[in-house]
Image 1: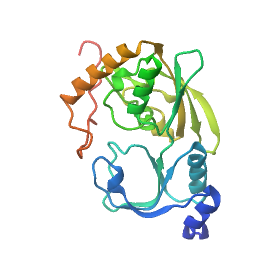
Image 2: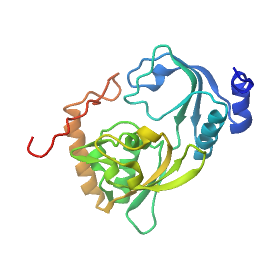
Image 3: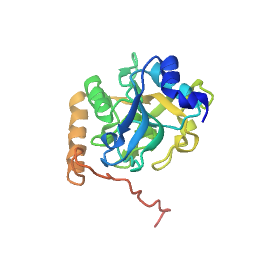
Length: 240
């Protein structure tokens, strides 16, 4: 084991300026409510902390995994021999004069929908009731009612494998049914901009409420340990 690995908590504190947690039970961070302990755990509260943490753990050659809301995330009972980074970077803002919203990857979809309702930004109502964070939604191109999050993504800010922050457009993600290029390349999503439409808040609320009602008839409450809806629908050719 390298000296950096042996002294990783100290190395992390020196580079990120925030301490790590050790021996953290992972069942607290998964909606399955199972999982062993992670050797190290860190929750980033800003994009700088997230970027610094990823660069640091890569430099130390310590295994790491980034999580958001922990939905449909299955941890092994043996735990994780490395660093779990929870993206806690939340917040969003409407672009001046245009129906676009910029969202940090750690923001919940529920918070995003409430913000859109307040700001009169329509388009994402299909996501009502989908748990988790924006980062997870983009990673898996989450969707419902024949729409997906990738349909509305305009551009995004990523941290690439070389530690550079790069701006990319929608085509970069190669979105398809429940898939994005992030599953293959594993760049880190920092934030994304969504191109929406101007809409009255009451209309948005009515659509959200209608979709929530439909989902509540099919899915258990979010506070119950549950695998969620993770089986894909078959992709059929025309006429099948």
